[in-house]
Length: 335
Image 1 (cartoon, helix red, strand yellow):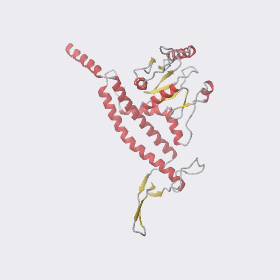
Image 2 (cartoon, helix red, strand yellow; image 1 turned 30 degrees about the vertical axis):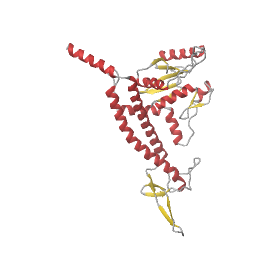
Image 3 (cartoon, rainbow, N blue to C red; image 1 turned 90 degrees about the vertical axis):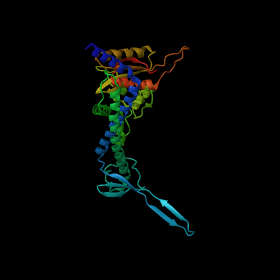
Image 4 (cartoon, rainbow, N blue to C red; image 1 turned 30 degrees about the horizontal axis):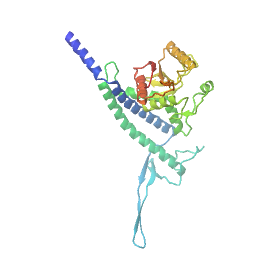
C-alpha cells in the first residue's frame, strides 16, 4: 500500500511539474474568447428575431453581356445582381435604394415587397447566415479547447466542460457592457455612453474616454484594462457598487456566475486616494466580496520622475487568473 501511495504521490508531483500556468492560461484565453464569440452570436440572433427579420437568404446572379463594335471589337460586361429569397420568392435588390438614414415610423421594415426595405433586409439576412456558420465552427473549437485544457491541467484545477463554459459565457455576456452596446447598435440606437445618472451625478467624469463598445471610463488605465478583458474573452460590468455603500469599484469581472470586484489603482502615491482604496478593501472584506486591486500607478524612478510600467501580456494573465479562481484578492502589478 505504501508503494502504491508513493507512486501516486510521484505521479501527482510529475503532473504538477509538467503543468505550466502560462501555457494553460493561453489555451484558456482561446477557449473563453471563442465562448464569448458564441455568446455574441446568440445575442445577435435574438436581436434579429426581436426585430422580426424573416427567414430567408441572399442570392446572386452573375450575368454577362457582350457588345460588338462596328470595327469588330468585342466588349464584355460582367454584372453581379443581388436578390432576396424569402418564402419561395425572389426580390431584386436595386442599387438605387440605399440604407435608410433614420428610423421610419409606421413603416414595416421587414416587408420585402417594399423596394426601400430590401437593402437593409439583405444586410440582416447576410448577418444571420454568417452568424449561423460561425456558430457551427466555433462550437467545435470549444469542444477541442476543453479537451486540451483537461489534458494539461493539474489536479487542483477543476475540469472544464463545453456545456458549462458556454452557459457561463452567455450569462456573463448578458450582464456585460458589450451586450448593452450590441443591442443598441442592432436596434439603431446610439451606444450607451454613461453609467447610471445617479453615479454620474455623484462621481462626475473629468475625462472624455470611451471604450470599444461605447462605454465611458474614467482613465486611460481603465481603458487598457477593459480592452485586455475583452481581448481575453472576459465580460465585465462598469462601476458596480460595494455592498452597503455608495462607493463603486472600477469593474465587476463576471466569472462562474459571480462578480469579482476589480480596482485599477492609478494614483496610489496620493494619500487621499490610498485612504479611499483602504476603505474599499475593508468594505469588501466585511461583506465577503472578492476584490483584486491591479496597481498601475506611475511610481517615481531613481531620478524621482514618474515611470509607467505595464506589460499587457501580464495584465491579461492577471485577468485570466481572476476568471480561473486562482486570484481572488490582493494587490498585483502588471509588470
